[in-house]
Image 1 (tube, rainbow, N blue to C red):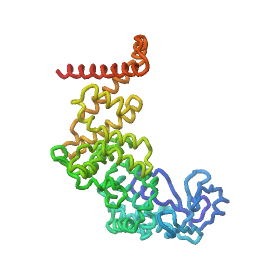
Image 2: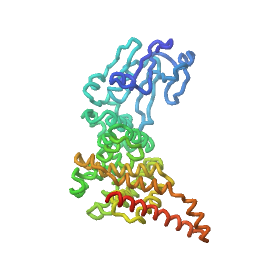
Image 3: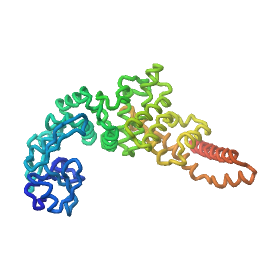
Image 4: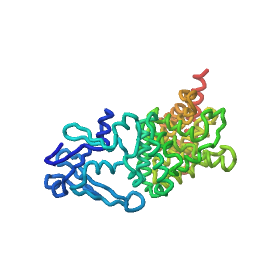
Length: 417
């Protein structure tokens, strides 16, 4: 571990994970009392532009010179960095965000823990290391993401949450770069408890679309769980429990973005499906969300009620849903994510409904499979033989697809009798 260096310590998440008996993805080291010249003379390869970070010549693990950081401007780009050999280990640990990330491990296996991170780890408490927490607004997102990783038996210490509120009140959260907000949000969506990320950030102005959901009522006969925000968090929780992919989880998060707007306009939730489209598009534009998330989010908002009511739909409407609205024959993965989000919407309505079967998704996927198996080339060839041209050929294909759906529904009905 030392590599001929005087003082080398394993730091940060690797120490935390070791104490939690979790395998760490990366090992990061801090080097105390050395200079860039010494590091490079020993074969370490510099990779940091803002501060001295190096790759070990053999292991390729990251080694950083101990440093302090002092705020010099708004946001999280304005910092003065001191990485001189006089910086101590404790000074380096003090600049880190949380006490559980401010521990070090020396070459003999001794833990250096000046900020009582081990105690907070045992108590499942997320607490800021020093008041310097407020110097980097990204830490607000990171602490929420730790909750999403560890679960509801963890908590943000009240004093730390006060600092988060302080960052909001001072306008520091307005300096969060959209791409960074999305980066942390995408990571949070992939955690085991993603809803806790959004719950922790409620009231901080980062996701106004979610804040507007609070106290928007829903019909109690369909939604015994409570308001739109409560429902949305349960839908996201269900998507995580079923281990659905990130696109399905994003659709679960955004599927009811239109309800607050519908309620404000009309005093009810009618038309919320279409109202949500523009809200999701604006959300994705603001945070630079990739198109693959935006597309499944928009399609789920606009069409989820059709999926719920598939048993009442005519074959022509089912065809329009699958082939036209969802373009499922061209984008089957997106279609699957849509059906999964719809399932979570139906099951994210409280404990009594969480395991209620949702046959609509399986039915829609089965029809999609039948359409995929249909010999479209043969339909086109027959249309050409019969003298059809241009749009007429497309109509023949559409008619064949609708007949395929009719045959499926007829077979389904006969099987049920």
